[in-house]
Length: 322
Image 1 (cartoon, one colour):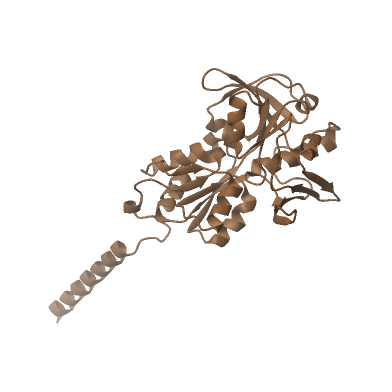
Image 2: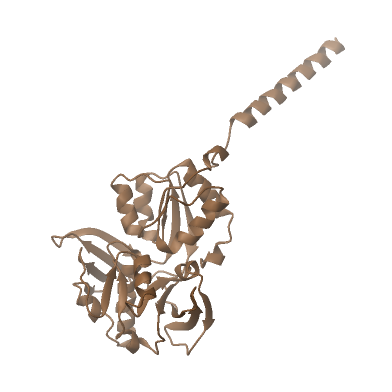
């Protein structure tokens, strides 16, 4: 009897071990991508500011970067809504997260917050100088940096009395304040003698590099992406901290990182609403503008691989603040 009982116990134990092994090898956490999926190019729409961190994450995941496209966040969103299929979408505008989530991604990951800056070929003394220089504006209909530039210009004008919005009004942009700052943006913007329109932040930066404009607004992670080595330079003001950076090739770039509250590290102190107009002048999209925060959305297992890599990277090295 004892022998039979012992054999029965051994048999039951063996069956339990086998059952546990079967469960372990057949059930994988749904959030973990299969290693077999982490190969090949990653097709993606990536905001120019995020190109470097996404390329590094793709490489860390063991894949190649040939499918990465530099696309403004708004334009990338529209492409996806129109039916474009990609593995990954990376945006610098947290306001677009809800739109992306309605498309149905597999996962979304926040990279962190960041600050607004201004980059110029020659040094500026103050806002009065800024009002006179030629600027490349990343089209607000395609790139969030564009409508942030409009908002901060109105904000600084209100607080310091320097007319920074005249250049944008000449493009047909409207500014209205009744407790909420509302900015209306025509669907097509012309070039003027002091403002050039670029399709994206990358396009605006190219105009700066070739000397077609004097200054561009940029995100701090975008400047990190450009491998600028920044050192303090000049006097601080109440609205920015001045730096000088050396771009690849030895050219000097003068960088002005905005101070709170103009840096958009936190939500603006007043509601800001941007109305993108269609060609007939009717509202096509309304965006409520808050703080700067970048996010990445995955639509395939390849995208999942990149998200997992990002979660294990030091994102502060790319200019993000958690």
